[in-house]
Image 1: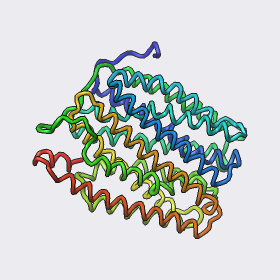
Image 2: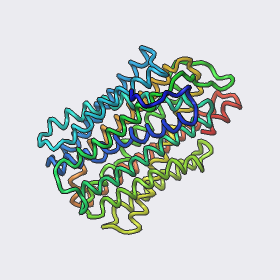
Image 3: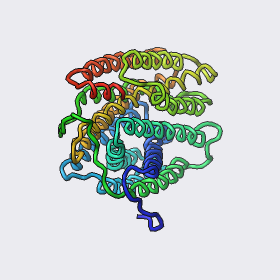
Image 4: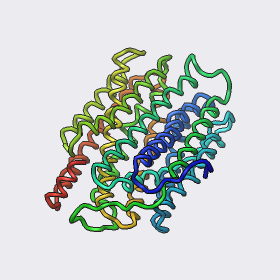
Length: 422
């Protein structure tokens, strides 16, 4: 614990929301830097082939997925919640920051990169799961849940924007002219993340989830959890494919495209909070249609142009908006369950993150399969990428329709209205 930091009184105050936002931003910055730069570092700096780069991304994502399950089980088994969970994430971030820096050291041995990357993903989940559970712990009503989930998504998107800005110092004409530039940037980011996790741990006391009137107290997973998990897995595996490949675009304007993508990803969650007032099938279908059309244009337009920048930004906005909707529904259903000690909530968030990481495993493998063709500008590879994105969009719409239908079954009028307000 940092000695000069004062301890806060209770959960739920405005300062706690600010600390939550800061921790979410820097945690996401650590994640985004690794997610966006590790593949480039392995492919461009360590000279790994495209398929080996994809295999590396799949392996480390798989390690994160298994860690999600392990962290969720431990937190459920030992009832780790409230202050204990906050202390857990503080100390885990110390180790996470160390391994985060080590994976970017300029060692030309891919085996060490794999080892450090796996250890980073394992310790990162020990930070991410407790912090994600705060989205159901801190608020006392459905509106608070939506605001906190939106804030978390917006901070994640802002972290991607910051990471895209950092890519200017790694690739292109403005890159720092010395080896180890990725490790230097990673060290700065890790230090800020450790400070933010320590500040978040200053929250004391405990706040239980507030159940809606008439809702039963449950210890099982939230209703419709399987559909939500499948949705986030599809999102990570297929819909995110172009975003994962964008950094490899063979163009001097690649950093600018990265910034355009992340600007859109920052706007998406905020647009959801302003526009979406329910689980509307039509709105989700429009979001998926926008995602497919903008991915098509961004894939096939050559060079750097205003149109390509705009479509890339819209692709990022629809990508982050659809993910935010899934997180909205999950957090609200955990809150409504009214589980007294939030053990099922911890399991739900861990399993949801596990589903996302398994999607990333598939996405990493697919990235390796199409990477060389994408860099070479082959039409067949770009067509394959678009086909995968279209398939993911269709599957996501079908899952969302099923989720909407199930939301209206077996509810009292008051609960049904609250569910559809997510």
